[in-house]
Length: 230
Ligand SMILES: C[S@@+](CC[C@H](N)C(=O)[O-])C[C@H]1O[C@@H](n2cnc3c(N)ncnc32)[C@H](O)[C@@H]1O
Image (cartoon, rainbow, N blue to C red; front, side, top):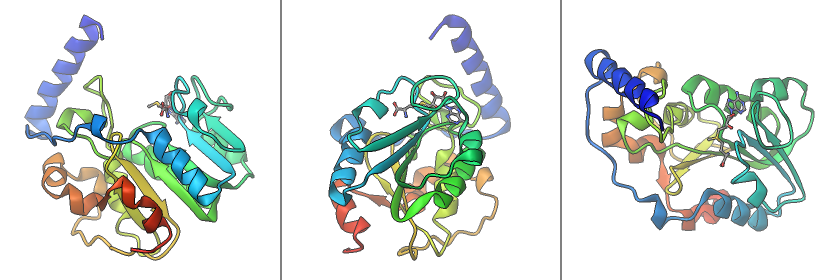
């Protein structure tokens, strides 16, 4: 990161502290202790014998190239994948159905919400949506306006919103910056929350309630949960 970018990030942080939220505690997850996203994705593909994979946001194909599956499509407006387009444009013309969709494009609440809604339309009935970057550890990692090299964005707020839908079952795997899971079935642990403006949720609330907000699960339990056995 160059000096100019650093200075800009620090100026943005000061403005954020003064006018938006001033909270300094950090979650202490060490992602090195957990499997990587492609290991979780490949295990799931094998377990469910999935054939059709879509990745939204591919960047340098660090994940995309490691996915072992018969058919894969990667969508990114800048680099990587197989289709040079934004996710919105891709979904406008897409006609294919997918077994597994990995959402890792623009990390803002609004865009992730759109990506989830569009993905649900093109997901097979027993398919799975996975969403990267659901467990930011610091306030600076999750501001919608980027202020840090590590940037999860406010993806977590979209997950919280979908946790309140009775017809979707939503979890977050404790691994690799937090991997959201959405299944098209009855919600087994509906989140009741007093807000309807999810974008305005505060990091402080997330910090203290993230286990409940995000419905955190261990990666070892994923297969059982997907098969509705727990
Ligand atoms: C965090 S990177 C993806 C990393 C990759 N999935 C991996 O696991 O290594 C985010 C990518 O999303 C792309 N992106 C940004 N806006 C997007 C959009 N509207 N639709 C699809 N991709 C988008 C960016 O160009 C960037 O390459």
